[in-house]
Amino acid sequence: MGFTLYSFGLVGADVIFHDVFTVLQPLFAGVFILLCGISSNFSRSNLKRGLVTLGCAAVVSAVMWWFGTPVWFGILHFLGSCMVIYALIGKFARERKAFPSLITCVLLFIVCFIALPVETEKDWFAWLGFRSQAFIQSVVDYFPIGRWFFLFMAGTYLGGYIKDGRLPKWFYAFHMPVLPVIGRHTLVVYMAHQPVFYGLIQVYLWVRDKGL
Image (cartoon, rainbow, N blue to C red):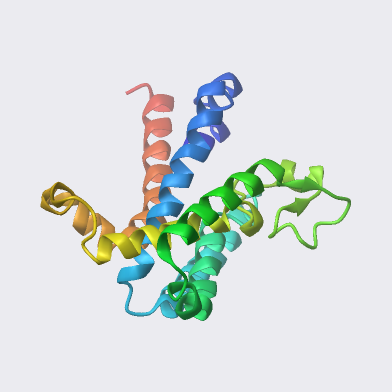
């Protein structure tokens, strides 16, 4: 949403690129990715969920390319890829001991997050985190597998603890009526929020220009 406001000139670069948002953006994205990994334990088909997500990612890429702000490997591309990968390796992953695997994934995530992305001349492996400076300057949403995958996997192991009822009782007793509904329709909410926000901005600009 911030970039949308920025693209319409409603907020300045000093706001959208402020140090606070530089920290908060990966923090919120990390929580989102971790939750997606957790939810993989409750999915009836991670393969189907991943393919649907990749389909939505393709739609986002096409629309954003049309508007001149391409998204070649954004959050949906990343999450869809992780779901498909987990569908293929999930059985093997679940056979590993949960706690050592969880700690290992967290450590690997920290190492990869610090080490990647790596600047290269070509963008053939941008989806892994090896990209050119021109690539970074041309995209608005970029989540390479190499940098974030192990956080997703950490979520899958944490989700195993949750599914097995191994967390404190208060965790399962806590309930908010709205959140489960949103959680079951996260992809729909994600796909709808930007067009709705874009429409509201158009209405605001029309009202402003008319002096109403």
